Length: 212
Image (tube, rainbow, N blue to C red; front, side, top):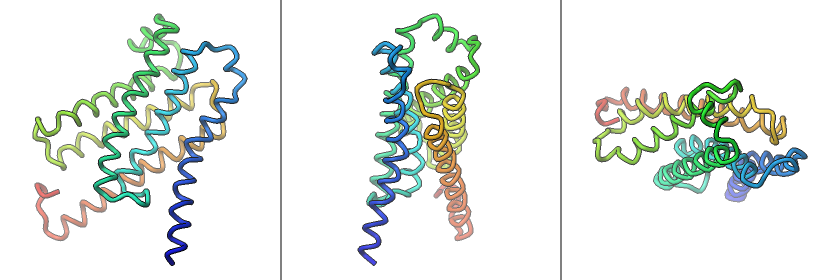
C-alpha cells in the first residue's frame, strides 16, 4: 500500500509538470518565435507561465497535491499568488515595451482584438485579489468574508485567462493549450464545489457562520 501511495504521488506531480511544461515546451518550438524580438518572447512566455500558475492555485488551496500539508498548501498558495502577479506584470510590461499604442488600447478596452478585454479584466482581478490578500489582516476580513470576495474574483481570473488564451493564435500549440485551459477550469470548479460542500457540512454540525 505504501508503495502504491508513493507511485500515486509521483504520478500526480508528473502529470502536473506535464500539464504545465508541455505547453511551454511546445511554444518554445514554435516557428513564430523566429519573427519575434526577445522582449516580446519574454512577455509571451510570462503569460504562459501565468496560466500554469493559475492551475496551481486551486490545486493548492483544495489540498489536492500530495506531500503538502494544509498549512503548506495555503502558504504555497500565497507565494504562487505573488509569483502570478509578477508574471502578469512581466507579460504586460513586455507587450507595452514592444507596442505601447496596442497596450493603451487594450488597457482602455478599445482594442479591436477579441482576446484583449478578457486578459485585461483577468489582470485587474488578479491585482485586486493580491491587494486584498496583502491587506486582509489590516482590514480584519474573516475567512467567510474573504471567501465571499475571493471566489467571484477567482472566477473572473480563471474565465478571463482561459478565454484570453484560447482566442490568441500565437506560439502556443493548440491541443496542449486547450488541455491546460480545460484543467484550469476543472480544478477551479472542483475546489469551489468541494469548499461549498465542506461549509455545508460544518453548518450541519452546528458551527456558526462566524466560525467558518
